[in-house]
Length: 314
Image (tube, rainbow, N blue to C red; front, side, top):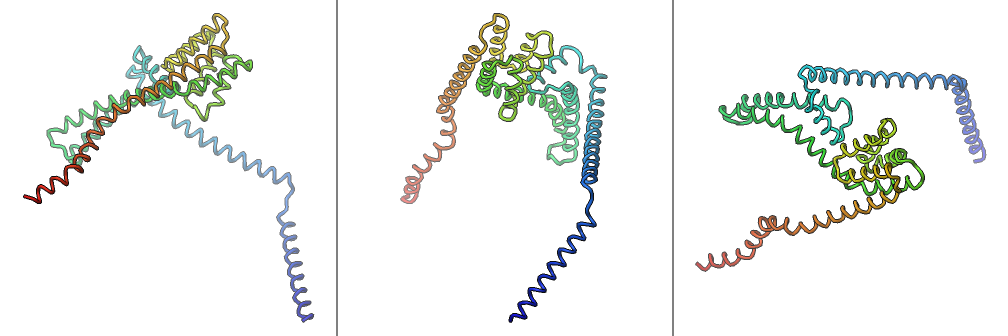
């Protein structure tokens, strides 16, 4: 038994020594100086960055080509000039589309969507896929064209209303943070920028509005114009009240922190009162569903046994 255990130990030691020898040989073959490894990693990183930049440039060029085509069509039709174009730009800003190409895309969609929908619905109606009589094909096409004209306006109006409600709802919390920044000694544009950075994930709409206002306060020669732009973009009475408070502060030198704190309390009370108003309207709103869905079922359950008994007796 001692000889067998000695042989096993010797075999294990030889195997371990063989593994260590092969491992050392492999390391000696594959070893390279650290500087070469760093250079290779740097070259790989540069190649990856160049490929990403090339893909981004190709994507940007494709986007610029499509936008250039849209802008060329809109310019030929004079759709980007006059009071109608200014009104369209104002509506897009109220909806949160602040890009300079937003008006071009919107005008092109408003021009192309009626034609595309009209052609598609006429084709489907003519092929019989919609199951519409032949004398109604023209009416279906006209309805599709009219829907294409109306849909962009309805979408823009809904987005603007939703954004305005969101700004009204989150503004008290934004004013609390703005008050803290002002009391800490920051200027109004720096406070806007700091609050926008802090609220970027939780309140993106208000953060974008504050960031745009901070940029305009920094670069526009007239600070009042920047505040007016903020009120016009938001289209919100709460933001208009904030703009008036900022104007009075800059004009008369009143304490800004106290004004912001009072506005925050007022907006929060307004939000609570609106919630209470919606809660008070619930019984009146639930009357019709109760009468239509629950009352007939309740009457059926109560009267059905009596009706069945009368039928059995007769």
